[in-house]
Image 1: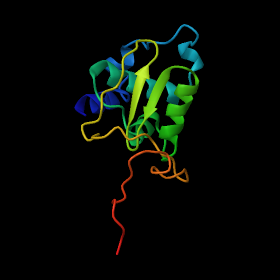
Image 2: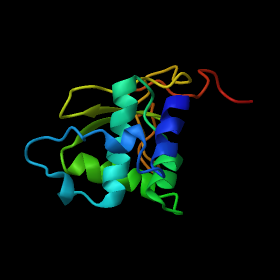
Image 3: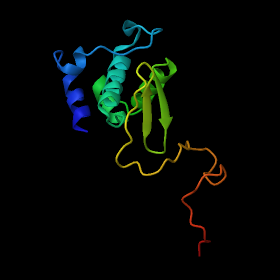
Image 4: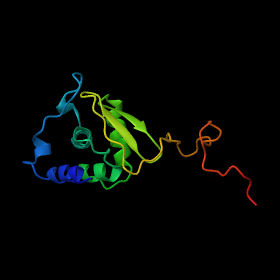
Length: 141
C-alpha cells in the first residue's frame, strides 16, 4: 500500500515520478480528451497495475481527484470503463482492473479470500442465483 500512497502524494507535486510518466492509452483515446479527475484516477489505477499493487479503493481515488463525495470513486471507474480504457471484474468487496492498453492487471487484495461475484443491493439472493450463501444449512430455532 505504500507504493500507491507514494503515487498519491506525488499528485500534489508536479515534479513527482507518477506525474511525469506517460499514460498508456489505446489509440482511439487522446490524453487531452480525458477530464482531469479521470486522468488522475487512470494514472493511479495504472500505477497500481504496473507495480503489482491492489486496485486503489474508492476513497483513494476521490482524495487524489479532489472530490468530497463518496460516490465519485465508483463513478470515475465506470467512466474509465465506459471509455474502454479499463476492464473491471467486480467482487463483493474488491475489484480487479485490467489496463486495456498494456494488458496488465491490478493484484488481488491481501484480504480477498473468496471469488464471490458482486451481488448488487436489491438483487436476488445468492442462493436463488445458484451461488453459495452465508446462511447456515440448518433451520433457525
